[in-house]
Length: 383
Image 1 (cartoon, rainbow, N blue to C red):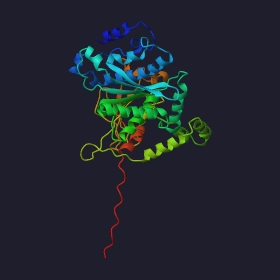
Image 2 (spheres, rainbow, N blue to C red):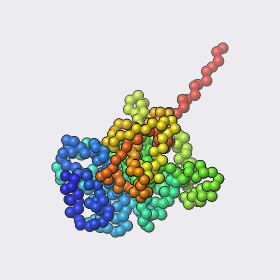
Image 3 (cartoon, rainbow, N blue to C red):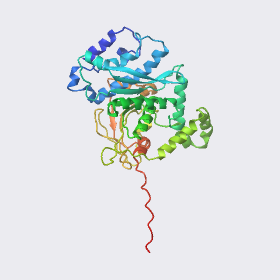
Image 4 (cartoon, rainbow, N blue to C red):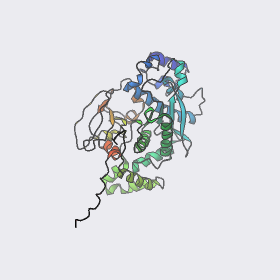
């Protein structure tokens, strides 16, 4: 089935572009079919990760198609979502240069019916908001690098226009389909946006499934500050490269982190948890710091990529949780370790890391920290 699936895609065009789906796309994954009505492929963690990674690749190619003026007939991007019975519902544009940095893909009922799939398979999201990372091409590199520097210097992306656009798009999609039918995903810089957008909604009590591939894990601000006075000059240079409102945005982020967010659950005010999925490579210095264990625990266990229901928890913050999948193939070059393609490769071996991560705790603890109890009213003295 998987082989025939690839051959069908290849038959749509004989182009040998390195980013064509039949050239660099996944091999051991099949197109949805009527059997999914009985046993949905979307229930398999490997299939889910593969398809969502393909959707992010489609966003990279949407921008490349735009830059290269490709027509509908020659466009590369659609081949990365059509096989899975999804359609392009909306593109997210950066108003600064008109580049495409994200897209909303929705379940294509018409395409599914054509293959006798009468209902959406169990577990398949109605909509996916996918966000790309840095694209080193001249039309968009300036704005991409500007946001990279924003994160490196301040560990916040809220000052970027992309944050506001992505947050508004996600809110609209959730209102249309419901939070349990929507997921957000991103790679590299896009994963940074997805994390902060998903966190912003979680603080409002809206929990959206989140998949983060090679998310940026450490800010230059933290690194340089730890070096000391010798880094002062470099630190000032990086600050000068940021927009004038970056300092204000940074201060707002710090205040937000200081504010405890209580999320009420259904019945009895019980707290719910937002559990993002993080996919990191130990050889990728952009995201490898997520594997640093918390000082409170040194225990580490591992399981297969299909393992589920286990969460990365910090004993000091019992509500902090995330699923951290780690791939380690030994020493790899950065381009390979940071690439998106690795997440649908045939020889992918993941471990579900269960140790307590300092950075996950730092990113999520503000969501679930109880506020201090209100002061007791003053008691009148007995006469």
